[in-house]
Image (cartoon, one colour):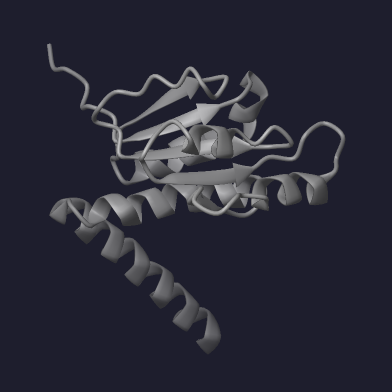
Length: 153
């Protein structure tokens, strides 16, 4: 029986509701064959395997990404998730209010941010993985070709 590869990315959730957005992160990582785990955390109880190299966190009014930054030296990519009040500006403001010394990459709100967080993680991980770097380059070439083709139409 084959064992699952060790995860390279931890997708951290403050609540189960965050998964509605961050599932797009997992799907995008799967497209690049990057192993990941889902971690539900309150922030201070972060338990990550040593193999994890990038953390992707939900970031709402309770800024999980900032909380996690104080507990791990790993790169953190924050995905702002609109809460049930429908106040995206407040969510973005809370996510962007990082104190100096708390290096957290802030992505777009919602699904676009979740996908871009995965792509950012792939870019980071590709620096140390030649096979992943080639998949990353092929993906980027495809984007460029798509843009160029759309200009010709």
